Image (cartoon, rainbow, N blue to C red; front, side, top):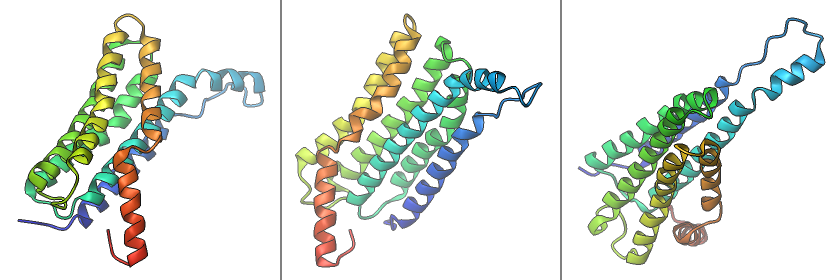
Length: 214
């Protein structure tokens, strides 16, 4: 059974919007015994730096995965039941990010918190890779003339982040602060467009020029 991808896009956008919004709810306004004490407020705000850092890292990482999922769907014409369940599994891990982020922000130098956060991100990356692999295998849900190099490049690019997260977890046993740095650096790898992004951009421009829907 082949289904339209529109409802997949709508559900995915909704889950990402909620998850990214929930991230900020972990940052609470500090309570002061003397509300007019500016120095005490400054100290309390500085003490929130782990929560702000975790929020920023997770927000950008979710943004990267939202963009990646959006680009994948631009190549997918129709979806079937297995692909729907793969997408739901992907969203399950995405919806868990606010919890793993809150845990990390509360215990930023604790190896277990760092590991659980990394495992959450690894699950997201691997499921997104599975999503792309299933959709492109034997051109099941993509155009039959899609370049094999584009398929391989997209898969490898998606797998880079989980590989770095595995390293970050391993490093957390010795240098927790270095693990946090690796988590923060991963989105940088995806800010610049890859081969899939460039191809998608060219195709989208061509569709706009011809007046067709991607």
